[in-house]
Image 1 (cartoon, one colour):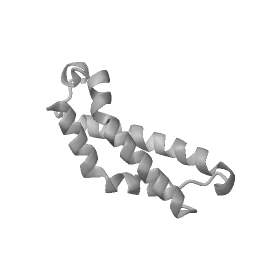
Image 2 (tube, helix red, strand yellow):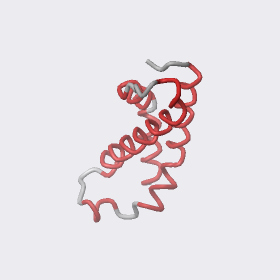
Image 3 (spheres, one colour):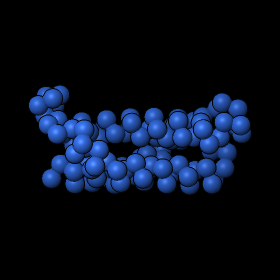
Image 4 (cartoon, rainbow, N blue to C red):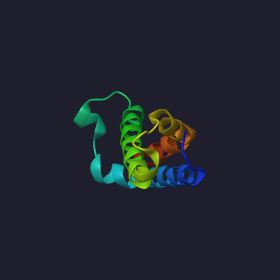
Amino acid sequence: MMPDSSIRKSLEDYVKLRIRDVPSEIHQTFPNVKQIWKCENQVDFLYGYYVGKIEEGTLHYLLKATRSSTGGFVDAFEIRGILETYRTDLRNSIEKALS
């Protein structure tokens, strides 16, 4: 579990910020997803990509924020749980960028 509710709130704010930036990142980085990766479904591909990127960034953010208080223990499932609560927002953000 997260050692502090303020840390969890901070992580949720970080996730929201990253999701808000997704459309801009897609336009700058992925102009032709179907041609580059030959994927069938652009939304599913980018959703998986951004879940991984945001999870990695959130883990890094958490480690920096709690380095002295957690003793190195981080529950990756709790981070994934935070991401799952914003699943629809992330999907909508990706779809907005692709339309």
